[in-house]
Length: 119
Image (cartoon, rainbow, N blue to C red; front, side, top):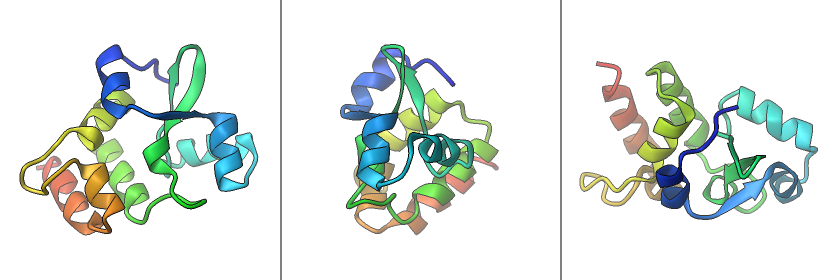
């Protein structure tokens, strides 16, 4: 797993450890690690512990559109840090950040922008 850089850590804000994420989704910590491997979640090491952004877990699930976006970013060759920066950085064309748009059920718009990165 990738070690998070300070700027990205601050940009993301709230984090959950693997144990906290597992509790939020009512699954085992191993299942969280599997979701990270499958690009359904994105995890990084911060303060020596594997963690995921709290914004990636809503009402006991992952937000619709998150998995597809993370897959596209991975296909574009983004590292975990780069993907997190992209997801949490404001984009005037959305408006807001990609994660805010996903949480507002505008995942298709976000994936379109991510797919444009492939070109």
